[in-house]
Length: 286
Image (cartoon, rainbow, N blue to C red; front, side, top):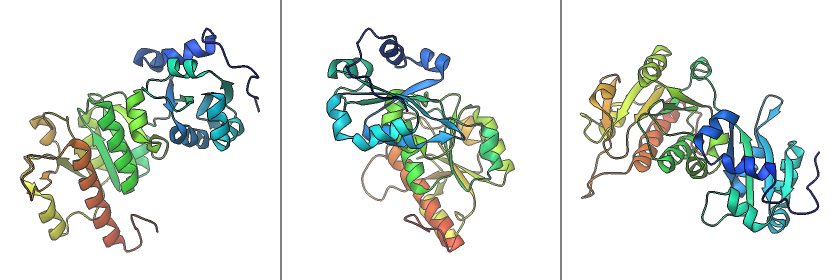
């Protein structure tokens, strides 16, 4: 286990400069590394590994954060990560947040192939098609995790999964479930349907009502929800690929729901229907 350096690492250190570059997508792609900021993300990163390979590579921490989150720092060392003490200014230089929490981890990419997701025959999947806002992408991933989805797919028209804002918005859920990236939407829909998954487009202009679908008992089988762009939803050619276009009913006077809220409603509707049919699955436990 690599001990922390006794003196804070310099802002001119090659390790700090390399970490700072990961704020840019082209460097993340080249190095296949990304930043995880804050105690929750770093804790999850330290606990995650793909086989024998740990996900967390390095941890930069202020002395104060190292003391406050001693269990996280210990977990990082136990995972084999190099731990560097750093000043608040160095952490601020690496971090992409306005108010850093004193912990920034460097992690290996952890996306999986779409073929592996299909081989696992998932029962609930979130497909992000044309989602451009990283905060929304991370929040939908968090919703999918909370609802018990078994996979998330980002199409090639969606935002970078490893954008720091997306990682933060996932609040650690990025490390909990398989995620495939860069999948053409046509391939995503065809592949999921080929494994017996019903593919539904979530759209406010849908011709089917989510409440009606639940009442008719059509939501209990394996389901993938396709979510579209924050501003203009799903294009007609994408809606046409799916088995049905479903709207979340608006019972009050609100004009619409934002993407993350609509995704949470749809995913939990499927989760509840599937667990009622299965008789042994619960949102809060088995």
